[in-house]
Length: 152
Image 1 (cartoon, helix red, strand yellow):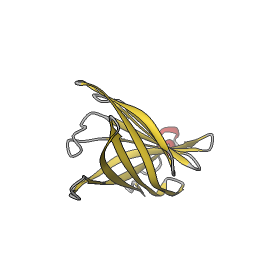
Image 2 (cartoon, rainbow, N blue to C red):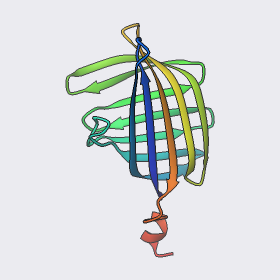
Image 3 (cartoon, one colour):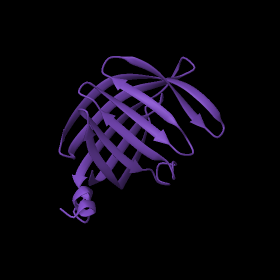
């Protein structure tokens, strides 16, 4: 497990063409298991999801984004595909469809980028287009957690 800094930029474009930009930088963890790259970090009040842990699973041709805490969701992104998901909140469940138009990843040893572009529909109605850019950088302060824990 490697400690990383996770910089997330989300640009949400509504039907009127108005953009809402949310940016977050959070300490996180990166590891690989079975050919899958994992990124974990805590959301904050900036995203409105304080107390929620986000896990991004990067596969060779797809991405799964999981959130756990006061909200629970699992979005599956595969280029050119529509995927249904359920967003569980304290106020009830919201069924949505994600249609992925852009998906690129370039991560080596916990350093790199993820780019997603997708439409979200709720109840069959288009809601917004979202562009998500995630940058992983070395956590210069803490470095590789595995080494610190094992003393190597």
